[in-house]
Image 1 (cartoon, helix red, strand yellow):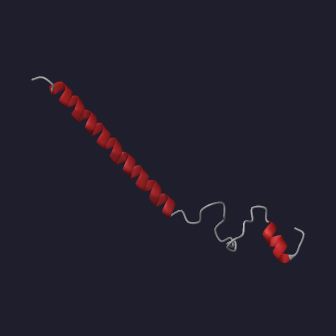
Image 2 (spheres, one colour):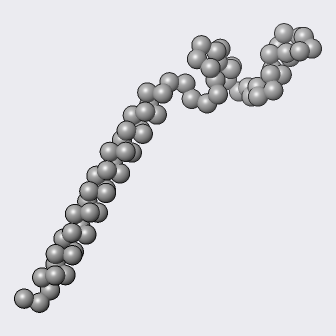
Image 3 (tube, helix red, strand yellow):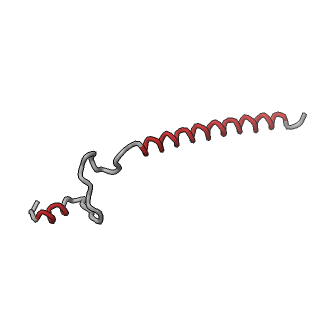
Length: 71
């Protein structure tokens, strides 16, 4: 029969790709679950007070301005 070798190669390739896709999906799901259960994101420490909406305090200036002290 002509093409049986090609058919076997094609089937083997499809099986490899299918297995690779399944593993990729498992890895992506695990990453997603890890991210969703990670808790607070960013550099904010757990238990640290949240910044008021509309503030950006990367240098710690907002607190100084609100309290009136010169840090």
